[in-house]
Image 1 (spheres, helix red, strand yellow):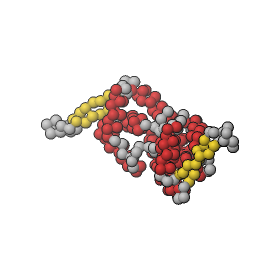
Image 2 (image 1 turned 30 degrees about the vertical axis):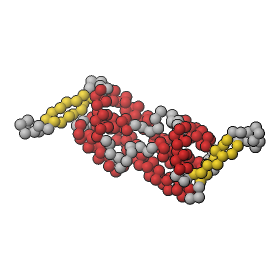
Image 3 (image 1 turned 90 degrees about the vertical axis):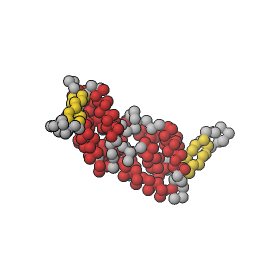
Image 4 (image 1 turned 120 degrees about the horizontal axis):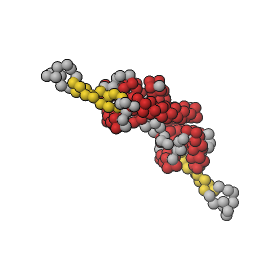
Length: 119
Length: 119
């Protein structure tokens, strides 16, 4: 087993939760994650977030829709990518979250033990 | 900053603590760490432990002595490698532990946050 939880799994966990909360805008999910971890000196790399989204689409958890940002296509031509659960995607996501929870608990256990053992 | 604490730092932390506790036998430190983390499904790789020991020697924190395992050199020729703090090594080690503690706290904060945010 790996030493610590992978960054990819950590990011996928947050992406799934944001889609559950109907906050599935591609770019905004990246910005939200950056914002959440600012206080920890950790910046989720854009490339990692996009690879995680790509994997979740490949695994049949999410599908993508695109729409124009504004209401007037003559002037508002910026595309917004939105992520949704596929049919069955919510169940897959829920199972994945359970697995990640087990690994999070394991990592918390190891780090708490290291604090007790060494300080 | 890296996503999570590095395996190398985690192992160095334990090695320093074991030398503080006068448990600085090379091979036994490896076995002790394996034993400590058995319940977490994590096996500290032997190569990582030896690289960590090598770094601590290079950094002037530890020095090595060797002795024969038994009392009769005619029959007991297995070498035991023992690690000790150099002059000033204890201060370097204590500073290093403080830095690792900051990173451990940061990682615990991130993982606890992930549990709160997603479950």
